[in-house]
Image (cartoon, rainbow, N blue to C red):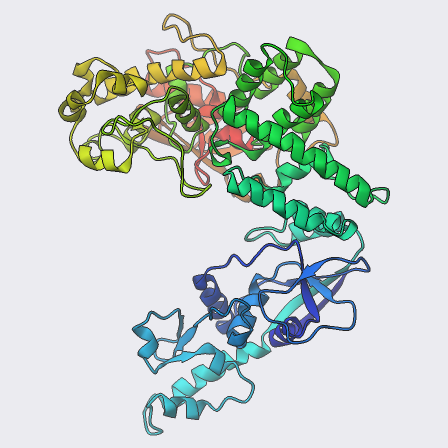
Length: 637
């Protein structure tokens, strides 16, 4: 690995002249104009802006014309730029005509305020907002720039403003670290990049494996891109990592695809099988599971097991298996099966699909997808407390509404999922309007799942800020029943809002139990919590080749005192710290203050302190929330 410092303008020139190129698989430019502005502000102030990572290889790696027009093509083997956002931004501003699409980046420097500006149409008329491209040129005459802007030589600010423009020009001489890594191993380069480039959107291993495929298979990149476009057009876009896990097979550690024995013919055959398997899976998810688009999935990896199974069965399921596979899909979504240890889980599931048949296969798949829960343990209304539109339960309730052909409350037209694009969010609104409850009740109550309904924006405007007692009488009873609204009208009043939520949680819990193939909630049945992992998960954790529980992502959440977590119970917020290594939870103040050996122990202490008359048993992994991410503590388990 070579490390040197170089003038940033020299690297820009290398990009413009084709001595540095971008691999064909490299992501497109994703920065926004404010990102470009902030980059120049950091350079102006002398802040670090990271290092450039160049890849030197003897492989024939397909590359694309960069987002800048490259005036020359190098006669020598070029270097590959593995993250082109900064260098591309600098090239656009330094030489505006190099922007390949012709849409210029108009970045200005305000000499008065000493700041960079993305100007509005009105601001562009201000002569003292100087184009940065002008100030970056090699022999720019600053006094002429000011004179042209209408600033006379005797202006008291002339000298100071000249110095500021000189400081912008000095960006040309800013030294940046340039790391050149020489390797003919795609995977090694991917791992290096992932470790070095901690900020922003990382270049994934999938990106580089796709590039490796393209190097072996002349039409590979176009073939793969065409299929991804087909998925995009059908609103079922999947990320490359999910597709590669199917193409390459799964492994406990990482994708391992490109070996010396893998040639073009083998890649073509494997890709054809991958496309076929994914089409089977997507058809199943749409038709049997009522999942209209990939955005409704909790994870794109949920697609892999149906794809593997249907590929193994040549697209045919036996009587009763469609229902079992549908139950598995909903279970994997409900309990965020792929939030951790993805490749290890998929590896185990792939082995199961190849080695087991019949009901025993689905029983084991469901047991794994259920996580620490008992396989046939019904969801309790309490499981819906502190659950919001970001929780997988929300998407499952949406699926249930689609399956039940719920109709809009005003139009009586069936709710359908026809977004303008595949990333469009699910439309929902509050049963008790926010304006009427947010001053009286906690956000954790009025923003919870029990107060959400799948109605259109137009219907929501019709409801406005009216209470259910005022507008629900105008809605047909069957419309309300389709979205599980308690029929007892006395619960529709503002003073009974907590009772309304409790009643609706009971209804929603059984909607979810029905989807998941679980027994109905019985108010006489005790709610069982558990902190124990299934035996197989324990073995995975203990396996020396398995990912560590305290990975880099978890480490980044740590403060000096631990990972910040909190819970909201009985309207009280309790803050605490969690140590991922020991799983100790420390409540520093308030109810339950003290140190506990497990999240559940700390949860029991809080419940007992605030509500001593109830059974205090709680599953700590779902009781506590990671403050930095808003996800349950189980997400970093």
